[in-house]
Amino acid sequence: MKAPKARHAYYLLLALALGLCWLRGYDSAMAQTKPTPHFKARVHGRDGDPWWKHAVIYEIYPRSFQDSNGDGVGDISGITSRLDYLQDLGIDAIWITPMYPSPLVDFGYDVADYTAIDPLYGTLADFDKLVSEAKKRNIRVIMDLVPNHTSDQHPWFRESRSSRSNPKRDWYVWRDGKGPGKPPNNWESWFGHSAWTFDSTTNQYYYHYFYKEQPDLNWRNPEVRKAMYGVMRFWLDRGVAGFRVDAVSRLFEDPQLRDDIILPGKNAYGDPNIKHKYTDDLPEVHDVLREMRHLVDSYPGNPVLISEADEPNIRELTRMYGKNDEIQLPMDFQIADVNRLSALNFRKLLHEVEHNTVHGQPLYFFSNHDQPRQWDRYGDGVHNDQIAKLMATLLLATPATPLMYYGEEIGMRTTPPASKEDVQDPIGKFGWPEEKGRDGERTPMQWDTTKNAGFSTADRTWLPVPPSSAEYNVQAESRDPHSILAFYKRVLALRRSEPALRGGSCIFLNKDNPHVLSFLRKNPGSGESVIVVLNMSAEPRDIVLSLTPYGITQKKLKPLLAAPEIGGESISNLTIAPYGVLIAAIH
Ligand code: GLC
Image 1 (cartoon, protein in one colour):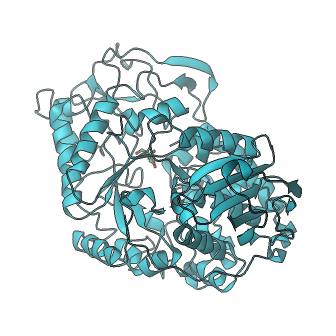
Image 2 (image 1 turned 90 degrees about the vertical axis):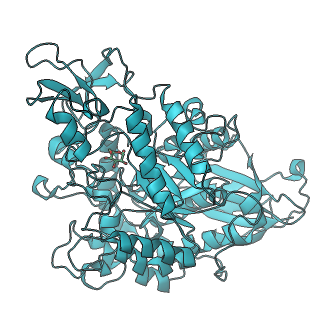
Image 3 (image 1 turned 135 degrees about the horizontal axis):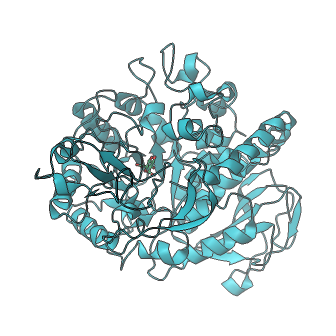
């Protein structure tokens, strides 16, 4: 996840956005072209590509998707009951964040047993049913693998901390302090304060990149590797289609324990800012990634590895692919976190990653369970719904594999807790008010206007249902052809129906235009190509597209989807409305 500091600006933006919300009405006045029919789920891999290359992946935070037993927390059977919705939307795979038994200090990212399901979410039988029901709908299930750390309640750690001579002692990172009350070095936890916690049972410190309840495993120990690869096999044998590998760049630490570099200023927790030079992105990570890839490649069906690693530049991101023998889909945090509508920035980053030196497949996303939702980060408070459609197009019309976050398709917004007492996420408790934690982006899915927006029948849900659910919910938006949901469905359908969007190259047009991002998805065969035009500014923009260099001689466009509708249909006479979107076919 991103550094908490980076979140503050979003909340300021959010306040501005909410203040300006009454100005809405703009969007509902915007027309779109006539809906296209829904296309049935495609047969995977019909052109020989691995399924994940053309898949749309959808992240589910299981606590918040659908509660089936009325306890106020989402669960596996709840997800199963919503598979028809996901199929109808056009989703090919779901990544579910951890559902393993856990004391829930980090809401599941503190795993106490890697090969079981927490009773809060159901049973292994419920899980198997989910996988088989999903399969019937051509939807794959991707697990969240948390290899960097366990819960301090995991039996491995309980054993490890029990004595210095326990066989599991070396499964974690134990060191002597520098003296009484002095940790081994200055390493800081991502979640605030020292990354070392003293354990009086054996008078040593253990290392934890995240909360002190999440001790880091020692990946230099071959037994740890073996155990974690056993975990991967356990889930692959149950039919999962791969893993999103959590915090993967943090697996190794400098064996010499050198101090990290102190930077100017303090973070939200009041600690000195630090460069995690000796605890992040060590070269040894890549040996593990190769081993993991080798393992998943030994299974049929092309299981996929998705990495969570917020690589700072294209060079580092490219390293995650290895020689195409490591991660197939590294999450691209650079693109996720441009955090303003800038045609220049997006063009540069999209071009860079689409031309990465190893020809790896990019993976784009804009929202997830660790950062404020895109509606708030990219919205301007006036045109947010129109901007939601623009972001949907940016995500779904490029050649990358898109990763959606539940609720983005209905324009769910970030709803942070109103007071410190309401906070669930511990980082919000430590960092309040500067850091409010991640509850705001984890609120229950908004299905309809019944109790708790159809999420749960409980009197109290684990996080409150946002008031915006009255307007933004699946039921209401399914009835409105101009809704954000209707727009998502149509772009998703175009991805399937248009060969150029499925397999076409991506050529950026008008490369110096600072306001309008335009690209051509060139048909790999002789059929129609598709142009995509996104006005990233609050002013109408006139553009002229020059397509002859790319072998396109026609001047007339055939709009496939536009929001709002466009007047001109000629490539030399296009006016795109503020934050307007055009997807059009051309020969
Ligand atoms: C990843 C997860 C985040 C979690 C952290 C520690 O960044 O996405 O939610 O808190 O790892 O496991």
